Length: 434
Image 1 (tube, one colour):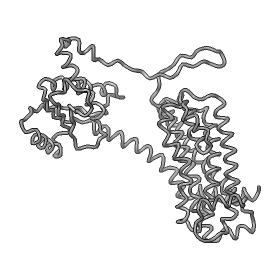
Image 2 (cartoon, rainbow, N blue to C red; image 1 turned 30 degrees about the vertical axis):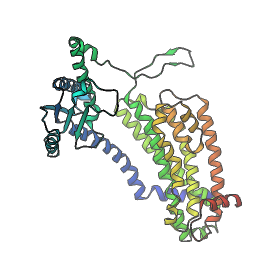
Image 3 (cartoon, rainbow, N blue to C red; image 1 turned 30 degrees about the horizontal axis):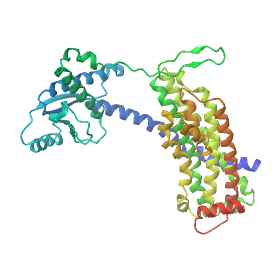
Image 4 (spheres, helix red, strand yellow; image 1 turned 90 degrees about the vertical axis):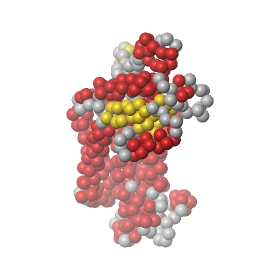
């Protein structure tokens, strides 16, 4: 044990005292915070007036569409914090249809390219009486931006709202159109719960937008810290092997002691980084006066999952690095480290939509994916049954121990092997043969 701790202490101090680690520790939150700042500035920049040309082939729909769009554009201004507008304000220009529609669209497209117009809306004559045939497209938007832009979230609804107003006026309901089409506030609420101590029913509260950020923050933080703690071993061990460092170290420590020392160093480095980021996140919540949303009860689970995940991936990374002759060879096996952390990220949205669904529940008990998926489910407002995290952690612990055992057998052979990088089948053979 003393030799393991000596190796771990040496690797830990070498990592945390390096300039690259210290700079990365500070740069990452600056980049994340800067991205939010840049996004906010960009959204404010896009909130300027944008000219929109409407070609109305119905002859009666343009004014109703313009009125509906102007009403919709005023809502973000009222609801935005500090009265700041975060969506564009559209200034409309009604264009009379011409006989040569193609030439007219070409001329208007030229104005869009020159920046004189932001968008062109072409409303066909049959838009007031649309067919159920999806192949018929009565309204077209022409723009110079990508398919995802600010207009996609407001103008289509405004066009349909304006067309409905015209239809209502045609059947004599124009006086009641505002009441019929008026939106009602839809408030997102947390689930009703029951206090296990008193048995009283706890009324639901409104969801805070920050609540949706906290689970994602914890999951992404876990992914980031685990990858940064485990991945460097892949190339570093291969480089030490190429320089025959291990051949000298084996005179003083066994292969298992060398591997576990590096694994413990990764755990220490990951805990240091995560504590720094967790304290920073809590400070941000306190500064936003929403410290009550901080999932303090989940922090012990976060660190438990972190340790288990880092032990598993670090041991696997050391083993894979030892099986390669050069750092370049190690890169071909890097996907074996990325899969356990990237699969949960691909499932992020489905799990957040249905945290207690069959997919989320099943995947949270698959050991390589347990840390991120189970933590994400626990951070959701509804939570999970009390026994699920314990069962998931138990499975993860057993799996991590199995990975360490298999990695030790690979490392024992790999640090002294030479030649090309082994295939996955050969690694499996090393595990069996020992």
